[in-house]
Length: 328
Ligand code: SF4
Image 1 (tube, rainbow, N blue to C red):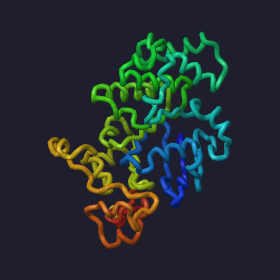
Image 2 (cartoon, rainbow, N blue to C red):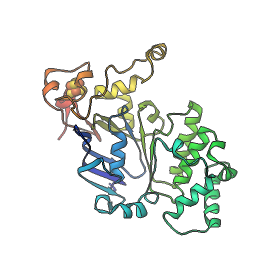
Image 3 (tube, rainbow, N blue to C red):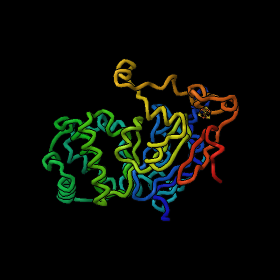
């Protein structure tokens, strides 16, 4: 089996604040196989975005890395200076489209000016070379070529999202990381964004995708592998089909069958919300961190923390309900 494109081992990272440490990533192992679409799912505040920043070696105060090793396409990221990572890794080996990208884009610059700024961070290039590169990519992805001369506000939300993803991958990074790329979009526009990302993979513009979302059902349309995160830890992982068709962890089931919308709307659609709130990562509950919200909690869950154990066939779960089935 080939080595994964991205591998993170024993990752621990915390935000240092006056009251102590917020342990947002607490002992996580994570991998993105080559050619895979890996989904990372969990509620807001569970540590997903922090984990992504750690995996991309984007760690700055108040976030501190406490332990871990990260290999991206053979490069050991944590041994590199930030400037080296900026030049050799970001935009080149991996491109990251954060959740805030739609709003953070500079409204006073045309798309092509944004592209020039981005490309020249990595290599010298003339205006003509950049325009030609950009137009060629837009043609490949069936995006209107004249949108390169538009201002961001002249594009619809869905088109803006597709354009941001297209220009972030102009240098053909092996990995595309997208954080909630579809959450502000209607269903048909979501499908266009998802389709474009899968086309980029099929056309070998990128190798693999890491897709971060609080909406587990969205991953059903694209993911080959899924990780579920709760309170700074991975609580379940596995091939997408097995996670979607036979989720093991009670939190995964809750994410699958419930929605984070106001109750009347949820009830009208026959869905339920997950009761309770995610715990504080400053002082997480003792034992299983999900136990205050778990309908199956037992005495042991309140005092001992379940390990993330292998269930075989590429699956793992951290829940005492399944530990008698674990394989060594
Ligand atoms: Fe629920 Fe216990 Fe499993 Fe935690 S370990 S998810 S509390 S049953």
